Image 1 (cartoon, rainbow, N blue to C red):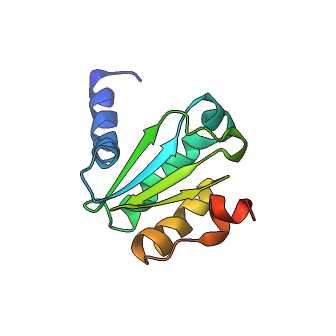
Image 2: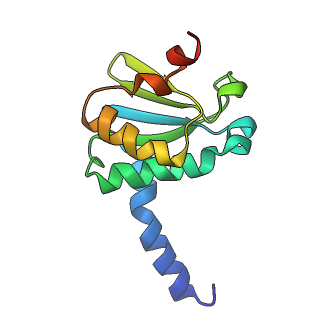
Length: 122
């Protein structure tokens, strides 16, 4: 960064991403960002969800946020999707899985069962 103007440009570019993460949508995507989640790759997963929600035109309906420890370190990165009273917990999530989860579950209404905690415990 070489100037105040460059800093202002960065701020403007990031404004939409920050607003998206703080949104008031009925659907919430929560990424576990405790130390174990970050070590397992949660930061790129969080960024991928922010990008996909925006890219798929769901910014007014979906909030992407982070939380601390979810308590299942061996399944990190963990992503929970809350829609009303329903919660789906996705495990070992990769940035590549984010696009499919947003498209099929968030937008299409069909959770991807093979990515969930329930599938792992069978």
